[in-house]
Length: 196
Ligand SMILES: CC(C)(COP(=O)(O)OP(=O)(O)OC[C@H]1O[C@@H](n2cnc3c(N)ncnc32)[C@H](O)[C@@H]1OP(=O)(O)O)[C@@H](O)C(=O)NCCC(=O)NCCS
Image (cartoon, rainbow, N blue to C red; front, side, top):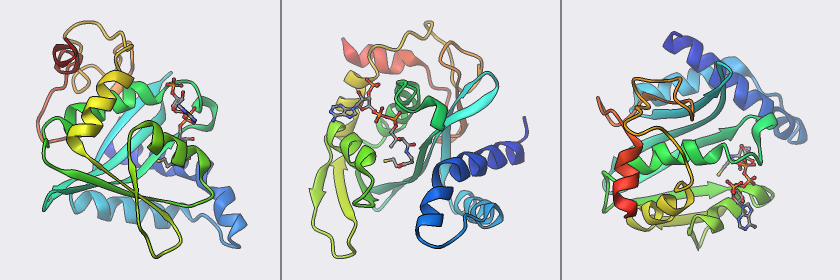
């Protein structure tokens, strides 16, 4: 699969999840605009993590590694058919491997007040609400605290030992790290060894 095909899968997943929100706001989700923005974000340093099932992208997370101690997650999307199926676990296991390398950073996020699922997920992952002036719910968590929570949340994964997200997109959990933390090969051992 080419990188441009991956970008198109991401835009399609966004469309599936977001189109109704745009309609509710009297607007239209325009794939070409999202594609252009995604490409600009990647050119500016954003990275991608994802999970595939049956050769299809079913979950992805876009993040911007720390700058001045802060990192961001511009997008986290689960395919509608996979919501509520724990597909987040293999995705967040990859995120944990990245976060582990940023022990002193802080993650800040912004959520629409109507996005109850996202708010619940933030609470489950140990984020604290911080004051905001833009009508959205703002959250913050230290990478050390988030990593500890993710270790527990992802502990039930059963990847074969030494399976590599980067080299083996067809591992049991079907993970990939399209552009992640530089030329790093993640293995679940990273997470397992810390669990003990
Ligand atoms: C928000 C989103 C990523 C959540 O993914 P999901 O698969 O629907 O996740 P769920 O709501 O089923 O719950 C995720 C986990 O939190 C747990 N959880 C959910 N609500 C909970 C609660 N109130 N208390 C404790 N745990 C809770 C679930 O048990 C689940 O863990 P699991 O692995 O045991 O199933 C997904 O709905 C999505 O893609 N939404 C559209 C895009 C979006 O809003 N993105 C912003 C995300 S921050």
